[in-house]
Length: 271
Length: 309
Image (tube, rainbow over all chains, first blue to last red; front, side):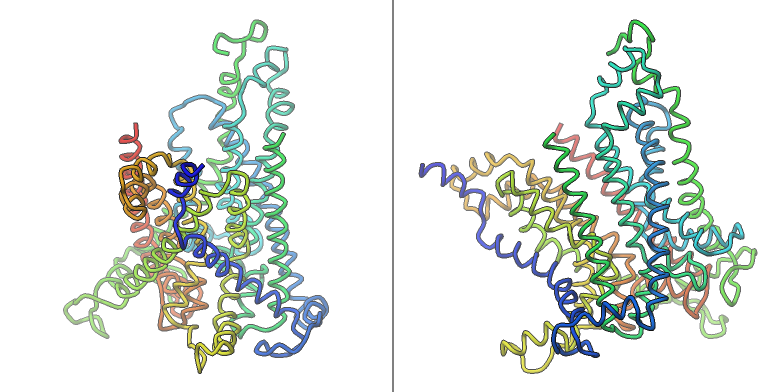
């Protein structure tokens, strides 16, 4: 027994637990503080004066509510369209990359798919702006959607490809042996097995699109705002309590979505 | 599987082989059109002449790169000397990103190690706890950090009420705030690769070292660290590279004195300076540096894999 505990002891380093807890404190303290202060009844952000929901009411009915509602709607539409299109493209690409055997352009294809991950975000923003300018494409909602589709592809691709690699192709082979057409083997066998990967890919792409500030800020047309660009514009004049309420709402959306994605992948493993 | 089916004669691979081009075509089109070609266009624009209120005139010019590296006096007629303004901004970005990377490593390594040595069942929950904040909007996280660090902010209030300090610590608009902001932005990128490496690590090596009377810190330094080095290097790259070109943390937490590459580039397109070729040239220089780092990293990883095999 003593032997076992001595062996376990090799793994533990004093202080590592404390550093981990410190790490979690640093990660969560700013978010908790903003969440708490979003319920402050005071007009100023400096002092706590008591619990109130007035800033949440302000978000939905206050003088700036129209601006933020429109920005939120834009963000939502962009994220839905960009995530759907990039997930569809990534699913097809993953099938071609993983199921179709080796081929000559495979390395090049893989490089192309990971390109948006390697190029710094600000460089992508500059390049996309210049591209739209060079071809004379007017900046607006459409340019944001197109830019988001491109940089969401690798984020959708990663979980989808990982899932597809884990699925043995004997299921599809069995279907083909039983005279299923190729289309049936794809839509009835592979796609349902792929569902958890596709859902994770979609959620990832959705959050990445919702999160983006820099690229959006470069390629958006004048007057078109998404939630991050609207918040950034407001924060430049100083942090106000209504911004904290909006932030808390957006923060909750992200946390809920990540939690769902976590449990989707978890139930998937237990099956 | 290999010989094929008796009836249709199709295997999975040759089924998809025929459709391969169609499967890959959409991703090729989108990524060529919206990622690769724009970068090439950016290269072209960096060699064009600037138009004063933004945009370019289609006339070849080296002015952007010249402005970046050489100082030719106010009227451009003096003999060129090295222009330090932009090199200093790049250098500061390297310094800030490097410090943020070391900070992430100092806190991220023990965290990753601690998580990887938890019982298998609870590891996923720890990883989940570390990654949740990452999925919260980066802008909101950065604004939250600024709110926390303000002179009259909650952190100063807590420190003062504990009697640790008498007057508020001035943290916003300092280098430290930017480093903390970068650390906060990219920490999971440090923790996850190291966690994956430690999880694969064979602890019987540590036990063998302990049996040979190595102290625990010697074991850590001489046995564990070399084994998980690829994970550490991957983590450092994944934090350093996005930090180098980041915009939000230096802009919101750093102020004008702590200018970094991201702000320099942004200003050329969004601000009043409005020099597109110069912004494109600065972006090209940043991209070149990043690609060199990634290339060195890829070579190092393949060398390590070959050694393992």
